[in-house]
Image (cartoon, rainbow, N blue to C red; front, side, top):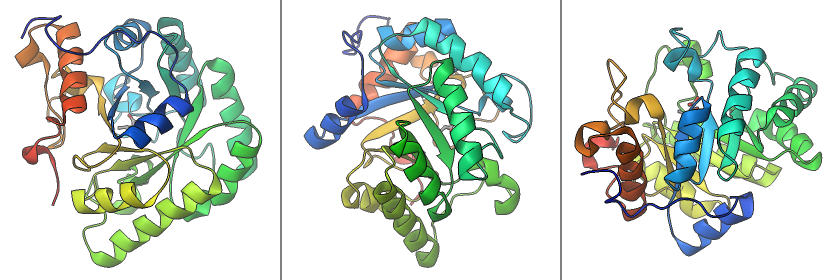
Amino acid sequence: MPYGNHSATELNKSVTINTLRKLKGSGEKFVVVALYDAPMAAMAQKCGVEAVLVGDSLGMTVLGYQSTIPVTMDHMIYHVEAVARGNQKSLIIGDLPFMTYATPEDALRNAARLMQAGAQMVKLEGGAWLAETITMLAERGIPVCAHLGLTPQSVNKFGGFRVQGRDPANADKIHADAQTLANAGADLLVLECVPSALAKRITADIPIPTIGIGAGLDNDAQVLVINDILGLTEQPPKFSKNFLTEAGDIPGAMKKYVADVKSGQFPGPEHVFE
Ligand code: KIV
């Protein structure tokens, strides 16, 4: 389909955490894209993407590393600044990279740097051990997006990029962690590579919006990495989709992704883990 034939429209006012809470309440899905530079950030705003994530996935998608582990605060700050220059309307979430939030004090210092670079929320990966850190950030005015399931900074602990929460004990642990982190003050929760039934249960049971990636259709939002949307990934993950082939051009691909998330057409059955 050519650019312009999709229902997504430019954001006309700034998205805040209140906007996303209201969308969860109303049942309308919202859309997140992980991206890293000013032109793509500007396009996301034009295409109605409610939140952009400057993900530490940039270690792989931009910098050519094999994982997110080599990513530094300086990398993140450079890309958060670029994204903030390109987009004034979407909510900008910045990832705290590996080992920059190992203690609450580290988290506070590094989150402040990301916020000063232009992020409006920080994201960190991990379970209940982060509750104290999240409360400390929240009390000091820093919104937090938590991240459970396949948390790529722990790839060496998982022994590879593997679906999490397949066995009942692990599923219950992820569910309990989600509740703990929401109670601690997290504002959003990314659920990555978990069975769709688990993501559905968590989304129903916690008050904060969930953002799925490889977590089925029953989340409050979806996130995809821009490289996957544009078919740039050599071995794309099962949960991703190349929207460029169908749409024909880059803005069309982003608009089609937005429209398909909003209408519930993406993710399809072929993108989910049961
Ligand atoms: O780093 C990233 O881009 C992410 C998303 C894939 C959720 O964490």
